[in-house]
Image (cartoon, rainbow, N blue to C red; front, side, top):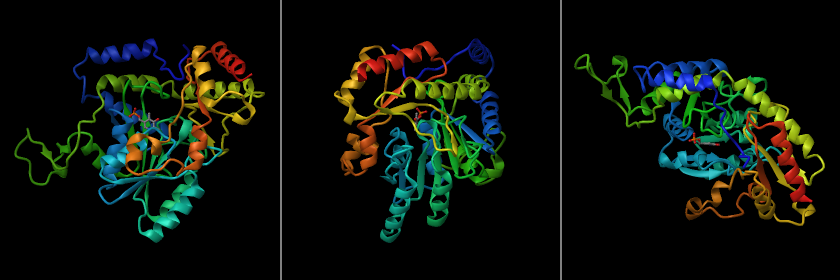
Length: 385
Ligand SMILES: *Cc1c(COP(=O)(O)O)cnc(C)c1O
């Protein structure tokens, strides 16, 4: 089976992890800050906080921004459930903005229209989670100007987009958002097994997220509510979690970071090659907005069903049966049973549902060879005949 995504582990990665295993610190040592500094320096952010998953990063990002009961979080329906669940963790309500039919990202025009209505109804969002689907950046300039006008905060869910750029600058530098989140799950661009990171240029947000990832505990006398009792002393000044990343994970991340730009370049090569291999097939290949340089986590095609005798499900199954591990990113969050129970209706976000009815993710990872890719294209061609 050729999977849709796969990690790349080198001897350097193995050596880095083994060295930590034989060292004094398995957690809370020097590797996590080193990893944070490396990612922050690479993308141009002031602060980076490593945590045990992107889901955890989204959670503490929302809390640091003050999201809570009575507030709204908005995001796109075409994302992994974590982009929306983080709002529910905080006791906030979640709503969605339909997608742009060309980029499949949250549509800034739909956002503007929904904000105008929400302002009249007095239910403007406090936080918007902008997801860079497949690694293609959202229209951040438009979203940022709406944020200034309506007063909401922006989290970039860049789980697909580390190494990508928007208007020539690395995603994560925070020019158009308050906090950016990366995921290091093995299917993503670089991996720490499980892991995530929150980046910000705001000292106060960084301080809050730092507390929240480790029980709300501080050892810094400057942040304590009253004088320390003695040198052994720490104070819990907020209700936090244990969302810490281990030293083993951070060492793997540091080692993987050395290959990030090469990984993304190889993914672009593969994407251009897919574009060519699929030219004459009844599929829509991904469209790239000129403002963005994608992280290229995924390569999603849409079937032109009116030109096919087989259904979406049949094509998907037939390709899988031939040993190609295609996938579907994503089932719209609002049609998940948990969200349906909350009152979301099918057909509330028509562009997202049209996308869901046609989308298929083809294998896309740095280790995919040209020969394997040709096989994917060949099988797809046979199935679509
Ligand atoms: C993978 C992913 C997440 C969650 O990442 P974890 O590190 O697995 O918690 C969140 N949002 C998006 C868009 C993702 O693809």
